[in-house]
Amino acid sequence: MRGPANRVAKLGMLLAVSLMLHVLESALPLPLPFVRLGLANIVTVYAIIAMGVGDAMVLTILRVAISSLLVGTFLGPSFAMALGGGVAATLAMWVAFRLAAPPLGVVGVSLVGALFHNVAQLSVLAILFTGPGPAVHLMPAAMLMAAIAGFGTGLVALFTFKRIDRGGLAGD
Image 1 (cartoon, rainbow, N blue to C red):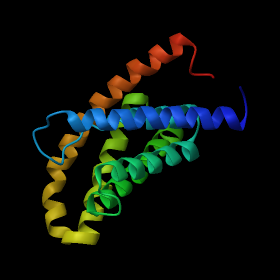
Image 2: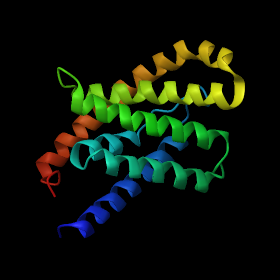
Image 3: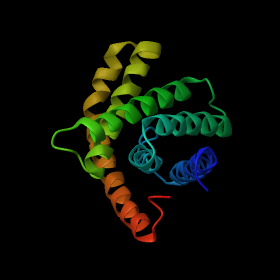
């Protein structure tokens, strides 16, 4: 299967995987309520590499919208923060993948995405809800958590992509 039908099928599969990872992550006990590992970004990194930024952005927006509909936060504060973070992370990861010199690997791209995700979320928080003070105070902890999560998620993505390549799925 080639062409538009193949693209839609691949996008649907990737969306389902990203939603599954999001739900799985939501079930994990975390030390702070606003800390997330960003497992769904594994799918976003894959989409950027295998399909391009347009398809990755579609996946990001659909994942945020559908997951927020499922948990009842659609168009609320957490939706705004998730959408801002997801869009910023997707664009930053694409730039890091395409334009960085020297080129960043999967782990570096994931790390950039996590950092930009948190910066964008705190920016949305500041612009729409609190003003700059609280967001600035949260920035150091948010950057540390983003670095840890982005590195870890990037390692998982790297090992996953190597496994996909061995299975012959990356070029389909």
